[in-house]
Image (cartoon, rainbow, N blue to C red; front, side):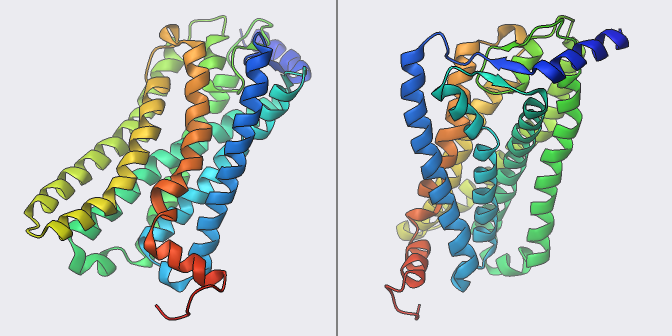
Length: 317
């Protein structure tokens, strides 16, 4: 069995894979190329703006913007790990990707997706402290704790991928090279296997409990406490301010987790490739590009920081 796996992997390492994508619909490929390129450029511009403003303006040196800068940097890495290859395959007739390229893409897509799950939970905790314990916010969310929470998020995602990516790549494929997707994504690669993958799917589900479901439970618990605190606020303006503080994060959580749960917590035999392709576009392209708009580009502090950096505003707050 092991020799068969090694033989198959050696063949694949030379020949690589064919990312089928939407090659049977060339007109759709051209439309997708334009749409994806546009969203990719918006993602890079919007998230780079957040990272630079958070670094350059001292008014944004707070825990909230520290985590937002982490999220923006993460989104740039997440899209860049997959979009250039996707654009290359959409643009021309060549749909191939090398075995090494596929392995790197799979590892980083899994890792960075996992980081975002945990980071969104960390950000929910930050909002919980800000709303429910405002007088102790700066004491609780001190720089050392913020750094530790961000480190846990990054290590969790990369640790999960370090387990799942090799297991997925080592599955015997019996010479199958056609990936019915435009990314080397775990569900599509598992679907290519010519052996029973129940054990691997069980492992993936177990890890998903810690990487996807546990952070989601923490997010829901945080917002349960936040909702209770908001309802206790007597002034309408105070409730509105608290709601505005948290609504952006809730929107992004809903967009991101909705697609991730659908894709990674269902059995492989019920996985629809066409649905998976469009959902992948959504969480790899749409969500990272709208995150800056949802979170910060409509935020007063960010607008003031942008005016200051561009030299159009006063240096005074």
